[in-house]
Length: 332
Image (cartoon, rainbow, N blue to C red; front, side, top):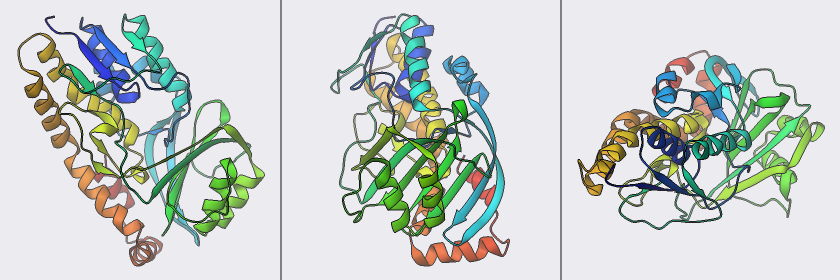
């Protein structure tokens, strides 16, 4: 190989690409701003990515122990709207990111934690969403002693939405996206419960108060917007595009994005194309793969966050006129 590759960001996309490149003889240096293991604001629900993509990246073994998920329910503050099937896997980022970084290092990759890279030729940008003004607040924590009616429960309101999904060791991941607002100084898991009450999801808030919430797993994220992101020419994962979280497709897109970047990175490393050409090829591949789901998800997100739109969705769902299964296909 003529050119080594560096990767800025050790999340799902960056680690997956690093593993795939290392396995093909490309020396990779990866820079991660944090350490492992750690918690991240994430739905921890993988749905939509194919076994072929996971195998091409060489990371299928890291998901072998993930919890198998199948059933999904959608509800609002007034009750259940729909039930459907959405095959997927549940696994915490605490566990998955750690497994991926261990595999990357075992394959000879160079990992620098508590370290940041800067944009440059030969640096794949996988450093997550760029910070920008936003009304959105993402919150997440784990719970025990929290029974679910379905493998994944989704709740929506005009002020945000939240998903509860089964992960490893009998735990449940609780993760939501909410409009920022007054919470009277609540912190930690208390902030999550306060936000749910502000969203009029009181029955869910009561359930969480009766559960065993893991305060150490609580984390939040602000200053981001969904959609296509700005940044260096060769970017993958959330640094390239961030789908609205209600789709449950964000983790899958991270893996697919890494696959889209694999061949362009290989072509650059072997000297067949320039870095600019590699970045353009990666961007074109991601655009072709994600365009439909990003457009559909963006439109649905605006409906879900609009009181009139949400009321219409609720009426259609309760009358059985909303094809949830078909909509799910459009965001996969």
